[in-house]
Image 1 (cartoon, rainbow, N blue to C red):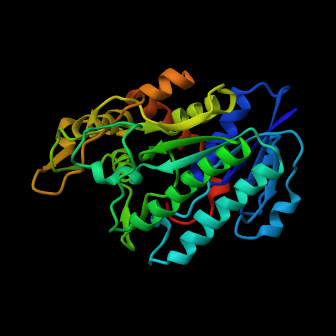
Image 2 (spheres, rainbow, N blue to C red):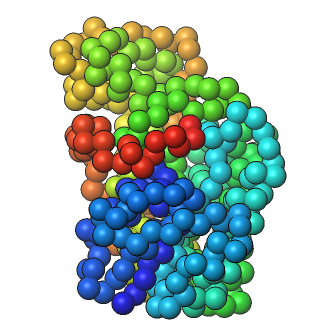
Image 3 (cartoon, rainbow, N blue to C red):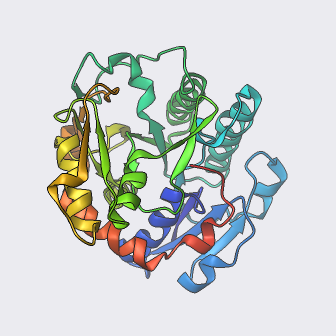
Length: 335
């Protein structure tokens, strides 16, 4: 039986992906193995084998299986959203050294491929300049700000994967992610070391309470709203793809304006939706408009986004009610 090993399975995307894989793959052909840093029996109820591994500790890798490893999925990474102060060594230990150990494990176990989630901050130099971000655009880092060093460390692993591909034949699938929308209980994170609200979750919680929502800046500014389960779909397609790997944008290719977002939150979540719940704050800062070019993923992977903005809101509402992963995420760092 072919094994799919998911590093970072206890994280936000990881929990959704591990559950998604059980439904996507034929379980008589594939076995899902979850790997995370925490000690938990959460995955027992899913019938999934789980290993507690700290990727910063090389000896922890000794407990992992090495037979019939087909795919390794690397969702690990220390984000600036988790840190109240800058510590470059924490980024290096987890994002670089830990991920190199994962690549060594891939080589040792003769994995056919490694799938890695890369930050779209590696294209930060195009933000505000290009509205459509292509996967073919060369890397253009911005070397200041709280995402700079994070993006540097993540980019090194994307390059390292290319080395392992050329030297050892391990296919390298790099999926570039913008902000991924999903239900999670945390509604705050760190920006430049200061705790702030995660805007969309904060607005959804206000809508659920029937409270007004402020609309900052340009109401026609737009984003590519990518739901977590479409990320899961793309990753799963990489597992069985015949291509040799490459860099792929995750997204929907669709523009959703700020006004459409807020109107959707009110319509789906407010107990008594009304147009006057929106308070215009046009003088406040807006966000950079963008959409992801997903044509390469559509052509080479057969990827097709399933979750429209409305469908994402409907599923978010269900996940918020079910709270399926809240127990797993208890005590987790701020997102």
